[in-house]
Image (cartoon, rainbow, N blue to C red; front, top):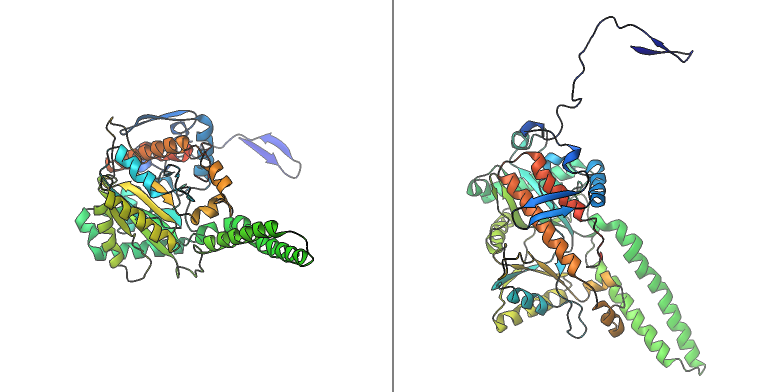
Length: 451
């Protein structure tokens, strides 16, 4: 053996007295996944990958996208044994030609009707942050099924990161969910000891406070400081007989747009203290022991989740408002449009339109979008800027290209359902993780973040 002599800093060879411990090969024997098959391996996700899915066949992952995902997974993500699903991105509805609107429900209903989807469900779009919750009945279930001692589940973001830095806060949310599941009788009804839920965690400011301060609040503050001063100067000039009426009117319009922008983002922010003020809106049960529930019709899903909300005495859980629309009935479509107008007029972000039967294909057997978002006129002011509703700006924005976003949404959806199917079938962790990792890798494909 080699030793370092100190303080001389000399390397010397010293014969070993005997072999005290035989080297272990491989070095790590209890890597994630070892309890139910071989451990996770870098080769499972490194380089260009092709993942076989049941819904879309082969989905390719580029090497550079896999590298970006590996950085996130290895440094920031939750324990991979508890990371069974990442939700897909969602495409917006086709660009609207209705005067004053960039997005409008009419296009969503028309597209689904064209795809042969007779009924859709319109779900309130909660303005929060996407959250996936794995809730186990107790710590023993988490250890036996997922191989993670000491955990009772997990709450993570759509990129696999822990939602809260404080493990105690996460556990409190899981405990409230667990109690509601028990009180609603869902363990017995679904024949399971664990649930995987797709949800939205509110308020938006809970996770996006940095974005609010650096981007949205900065725009509101600067416009609030500059525009009133400009108006005062123009009024003074007008008082001196200078012709500035047209310019002053434009500045008033700009000030009104800026005020509407500030009001828009403030609607989705409120103060929280611990879990006081925090709300979790579950809208789909993704999987249970031995079954993927991703293809269960949305009305059945939401009926179960309504019961979950009703059996939560803490006020953490929030129901999702919805309306079923017949895409072939003019009166029903009109009612859907009116519902959206009412929802967004009251300050809501908008709605998500989904095939009622969840998993749908068009007349040619192609997978149709699992959901499209239709965002409200004022909410889009946050996304595209205070003055986006000006006719010239709207005209420019109507040229936006949605093809890549739609393709990305479908590929991620197919991969997400593949991960759930593999989980339900009891396949090894590396097989489930292969599909989950691919969803995260696709997220690094370049696409307009405003879509």
